[in-house]
Amino acid sequence: MGRILLIGGVGAGKTSLKQMLMNEAVNYRKTQMLNFSQTFIDCPGEYLEIPRYYHVLIDASHQVTEIWALQDATKQRTFYPPKFSKVFNKPVIGVITKTDLPKSSLEQAMSYLTYAGIKEPFYPISIITGEGIEPLRQRLEGLNER
Ligand SMILES: Nc1nc2c(ncn2[C@@H]2O[C@H](COP(=O)(O)OP(=O)(O)OP(=O)(O)O)[C@@H](O)[C@H]2O)c(=O)[nH]1
Ligand SMILES: [Mg+2]
Image (cartoon, rainbow, N blue to C red; front, side):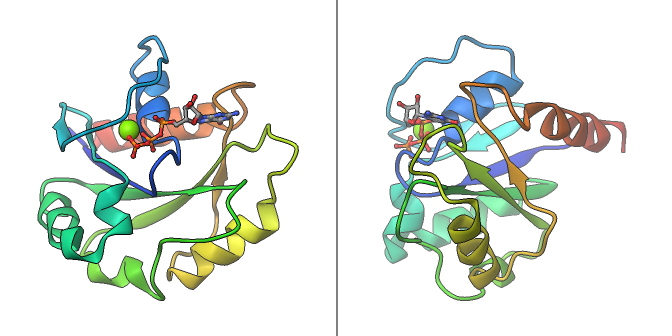
């Protein structure tokens, strides 16, 4: 059974993506603590934004098959330090969220993920239009078949 660690800044869309892929109702509630399910480990965005919590992400990564690093396409800043993905001893894939919003920039988000040491292909998604959800669903199923 594959399991995924979701990382990204506050409000990046980690919980929404998880709810969508688990076929749960997507409703907003700030994540307050590490949340374990069979398929996902979801965490508060603060664990990426505040460096003294990095160790929590690194510990959690030992319990997953791969890490999905989210970048909000509407954000003019990144919380990923250079080459951050290299601290994990697991594959890290880049997911670009909120592509439906007018002020989103795919290029900007791609450059932030690249800066974090993550390789293409990236996965652009919108939980509003459903764009990009299917490829991630397939990726998840692929992990579960391993
Ligand atoms: N327009 C749009 N809004 C989105 C999308 N994904 C998430 N949101 C909204 O962004 C807000 C934050 O989403 P969450 O999924 O709670 O973000 P999170 O990364 O879990 O945030 P924390 O738990 O605080 O770390 C919510 O109001 C979501 O509805 C998207 O693809 N498009
Ligand atoms: Mg959350």
